[in-house]
Amino acid sequence: MKLKELLDLADKAYASEGMLDLASYYDEAGNHANLDKPGDTLAAFVVTELAWTFDPKLDDEGQLQEAMRVIGAAEKDLHRVWMALFERSSYPTLQVIRQRSGFASSRLQGLFRERG
Image (cartoon, rainbow, N blue to C red; front, side, top):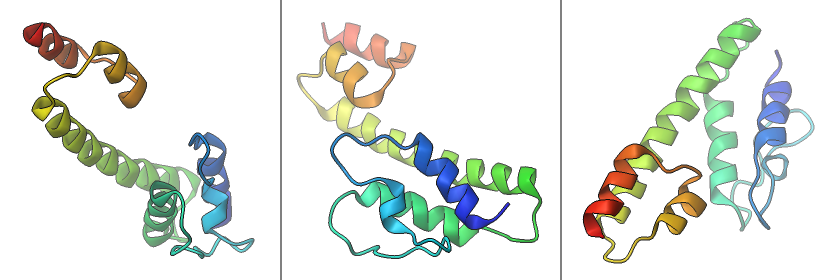
């Protein structure tokens, strides 16, 4: 798997309402570019993480596993930040939880119920 193929795969899955897509942050060769372009810093981050951890010596499965590892680590970090914000908020609603996070885990629903 080439870096461009991996980035294109991620780009197809990336959905950011009204913002730039991942392809805005890499060129036709798969090199990350335009990282200082204003717009979607999360898209720039995803491209950077995938590009920096790409190892051309790995086979396709190895490449996918590494990409999932680094994006999964970022997801956990972002979730911890989201949880800290949620726990500090004095007026979260279940609708906000579902819209903003894309899920409503049982832990979040429990916190919501506690706040009434």
